Length: 530
Ligand code: U5P
Image 1 (cartoon, helix red, strand yellow):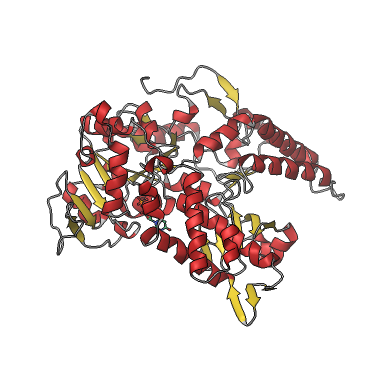
Image 2 (image 1 turned 30 degrees about the vertical axis):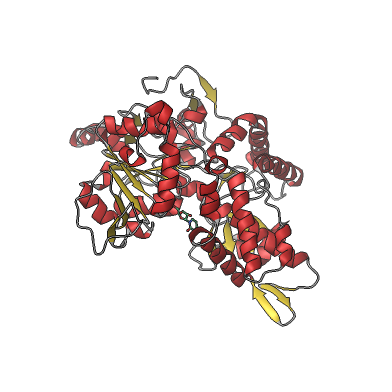
């Protein structure tokens, strides 16, 4: 294993970025790397908190989603939707995580970090720019609007595809008449909002009462990835004196089955109960409520699954299983304060945003799609280069024009080329493109990752490739005025603009100021999240 420092052996130009920075070449394989938004010193972490589903237990794709989709269509038929729904087949190439569903117009929206609509799809029909403009003035929508539901998690993938299938079914079936906000059959009007609510409730029902969990437990090998490095990772965390904490929304029975499967390697590591890998286990956590008021903390009777009566007041014992509680109570009983904890989860809202915003925990987001995203990023380099070339040709058209220009340059051909490359690039990921971008524009999901995940990777096992004293350092973040202006560009004093505000009177003034400012104690202090 390496000593943890990135090895800068050469530099390559960063062609598909507006930045003129050079990329370092890192020693670790990209698929093993952990990416950094904010500096994090692992040495300071005393508690490693883990979510279970899609973090420790990574469901196999597309077989797990396909099974979820089949259960979902059966449930929708059971509650009264047409039996034709049973003919729907899950298509993994269609859905991408992070889309917004507009309950009023029944559209799936791919949105950038500011709320600008990048892609709008009704059923399986991609709306044209003028149609998007008609429904959403300025092709813009705000998340505060309660009409929107963010399909944030990997559990939402079957549901995303189902919403498209249902809307496509009603839109293309002549027996149904269409309105702007729903469909009518006989005397019954079904708004897109009610269709959405039915689909959402059906998904929740599958998780809490349906056969999704029993089907999974009956065939764990088919649905859940198992890796013999997981026990090693958990043991290594405890060997360095840190504590392992499991906080899952799943119930005891399911958690027990999944964790037994994930941590049971009798031939390799002897027979060992899964709870022996954990200092604290919390099931039925009800995140994100767990990070706010939470619920009553109870002890689970592992023989019967029954919960103890009243609040458990502590202490927390390794080997016992707790149900519910709140972040505040569990942290107090463990003796953990905000920045001592690194929480590893896959849910950008329920795990990462809430634990960071409310509790100040350090956050590690698991993004299983990153493996494919990195594959396209590296394999389709030529397309990214084309994109850069076309964008630069587009700016060249305007390069020598100024306010005296009266004739509007014709950019139609080049814009058409740009759209064709963006389309080809999007298709390399799937029908709805990348999780993080459309062309050069970043998605809302990408902006949330940047904002709330201190570090992120495709798998928790990537932690095995770093020493526990590692200092994750974020790449420099450049503003557009820094990313697109070379340091040497403004050396020509005659071309300097008028300085409207000056914050130093002279060089001597700067020196005087520098002597007043205390030196930073450590680099980490300078880069850590406030
Ligand atoms: N879950 C639901 N409804 C959903 C999605 C997930 O109840 O729409 C459940 C899963 O079945 C799982 C839990 O038991 O939430 C997620 O647990 P975790 O990610 O906190 O481990």
